[in-house]
Image (tube, rainbow, N blue to C red; front, side, top):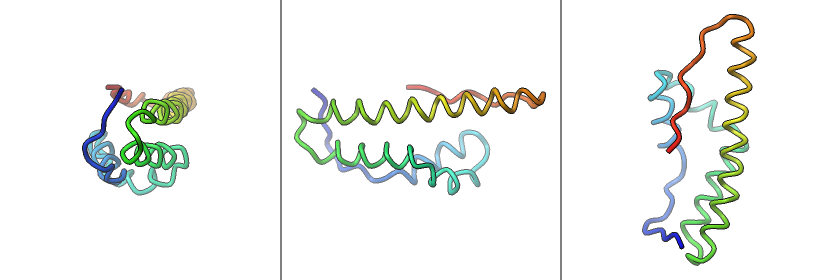
Length: 94
């Protein structure tokens, strides 16, 4: 069973940190429009507020959206590499 101790503060700070980590802080705002990322944020917010017995199931749904975003990242890398452009650093998975 997972427990949360503080409410989920939203995802702008995560976007900013991620964009800075790839050296493109300007990418944070456009990335905030990705529907699947919004879904992850909404599910994380729900998980921070519900009965601890429900958290695992909610985070499993959030993980499914994360996997979709990861697949989209990899597919975009493959498409761009097809034109001989350099590959970016892969996202860190914790």
